[in-house]
Each structure stands twice: as structure tokens, then as C-alpha cells.
Length: 271
Image 1 (cartoon, rainbow, N blue to C red):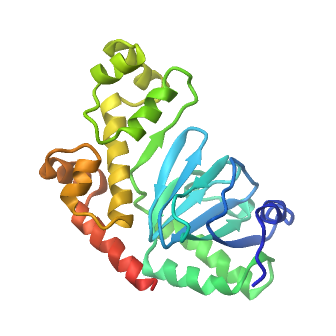
Image 2 (tube, rainbow, N blue to C red; image 1 turned 135 degrees about the horizontal axis):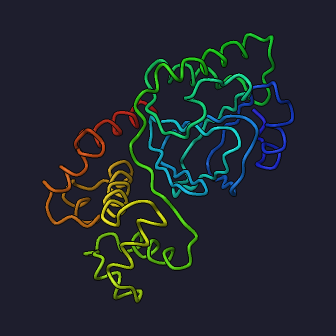
């Protein structure tokens, strides 16, 4: 299959408004913030990537897909050269269900996985009237039926010149004992002022932001690193394994060990 460059991909996918467009990438490709006129399904194999919009960051792990509504500016970021990405763009005129209007990260069940694997035989524009188009249209139509439980993690982001450095510091020092007092002293804020910045700019309390950031970092370690649960807990700022496990469960609905084993099984399927 001829490799399509990023520039060819971006110019081609909206060239024919009625088509479904498929693109497969070995994700050494890094796209800048962009948008297009078609809704987008992106499935990741062999690693994890991060999806950024103008106001949110999403964690996209193995055996999950992202739905990006038409017109939403976004970009993907990854740290792992082995990541493979399957992307399918659907005509927005045929996506009337409310599901297609909302960004989300969803698990891929066995039915959808088999359909994604089957779709690998096609690339580029697929036009109405073909069997391939009918197959892909069926895939699109089942998404609202099988995608009932989105991954409950999305981090708000901001370019606010006062708060942005604080967020960067949190991500770079996630293992530290991070409190409003510690961060306030580091950046010249009172605790009350910093707390108010999180609530007014991010619409999220500081401790909720910190908790979600730590769980996202933990998920990345659970998928990509050969570390024990206690090592991961320590690396993301927990001194207690039980506190880490309970927090993880309260957000994800499963224990860290279960999440880790599931993703080991997914990786084994792909080898």
C-alpha cells in the first residue's frame, strides 16, 4: 500500500464531501492542531497516544477509539514510535445521532475490532454506491449502539499565562507532594488565589485536576512499563498502594491490576 504523507492526507480527506476516507499511519507522524469537515474515528494499536483539543487533553489507550466530531480542532501526541493508528473519516451529513456531536474515548468491543481489521484492505476515498462504503457506513451506524461508556478522563487545558506554568510544573513533578501551599509558594500565589484560578479557568478544583493527572500518568505506566503496582503508585505521587488503587477504581471502575492485565492481553493479541 502506497504511503500517504500528512499533507496529502489533510488535503485529500475533505476533497470529496460524500466519501468515507481511510488513513493508516505508523505514528511517527505528528499533526499540528487542525480540523476537517468529516467526523473522525481513530483507533490505536501497539501503544498509547494523547489527543489534544483547544480546551481538553484525552488519554487514548490500546483497545479504545476516539470519536472526534466534525469541525473540532485537535492534534495527537505520542511518545512511542511503535504506535499504529487507524483513522476513518465519515461524512457529517450522515451522522445525525447525538453521539456524533460529542468528543469521546470509548472501548473497542470484539465486533468493532473485527470490522476495523477488515477495513484495512481499503485506503483513501471510499465512495457511496460501493460495497466498501456500505460496510463502513454500517460500522459508523453501530457506534452509538455499542459505545455507551466513554473513558471518564479528560483534562482541561489552558493558555492562560498565570496558570499554564503551574500545570506544566504539575506534569513534570507528579511524584512530588503537590499541594496548593507548595505550588502557591513556587509561583507567587496565595492558596486562595490559586484555588480560584483552577475553578474559574479550568472549571475544576485543584485536587480533582491533580487526581486525574496522576491517574492518567499511572495508566500510561500500566500500559507501557514493566513496573509493579507499588512502583507506579510511587511514581505518580501515592505513598499508599491502597489509596492509589481505590482512587484508580473510583475513576476507572476497575483496579490497576485489572487494567494492566487487560492491556497485556490486548498487546499479546497483536503479536
